[in-house]
Length: 337
Image 1: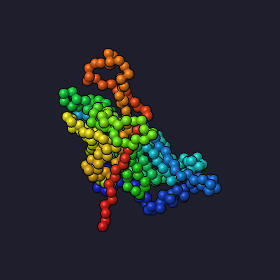
Image 2: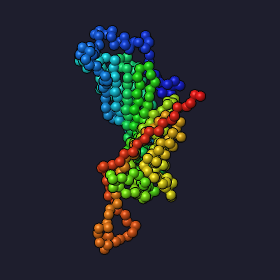
Image 3: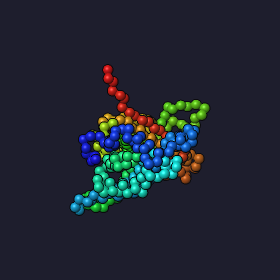
Image 4: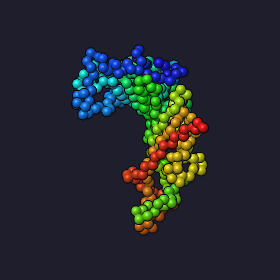
């Protein structure tokens, strides 16, 4: 089941077709109990699942003297056809969470890890291929941001932790369906000291905020997106493109910057750039909460204690409360007319 297959990844069909999962649930040594049967039809187990959280994993690829590392935190989740473990305490179909942890390590050893998205697809596909009682599998992966140490030239085997932003993905697959992938980034904290404004908003009896034609703009960006073409997607490139689009539309050219009339406008411009540059992304959602830096009012103090170098500006950081701005931009369906 290599990722490089020209076909999209599917769960392996059972020998008797798509009805085999249902048959398996009802023809075991002991018929699978359900919450509905146990409660005389009063209740139903509308959702259930279990897994292993926060499996820490460092992958080192040694190519002679040149080494590459990627560190991950992997969480798995399975849904079984049977409710027996819940209803009557029968664990015969339960794949232990410790076994799920071991599976992650062994799959990483066998296949390596090219990208978190591709490895997540290997993990969920493995559980669906191996255990016919598993009907859904999910894998959530967070990547820790290591960069190669620069010591005049790139170091062969030394790295530095560089938490500019954290990458994550969530891979899901149901039996007989294609794998789906959601990727994202979080913790991208940015600030600029000019070229930002917020004016001409609603002014009424509830308003005390004044127009701000010049203000500090700071936010901590979160973004998530999905793909509509898994075969051609370049996951590493897509993640870097999203990050670069955010920074480009936030900061602008180094010498002049770019004007931001609102957080909403900057967010939309970044999302638009992503969809224009990465054809495989079907939609992207971003959240940009305000991290305010407020002017210190020194007008109440005598001039002899406030006079100083006019190039000094002092602001008060305010974390809470904070405004939150979000939007999701998706491609419109193509007309068939």
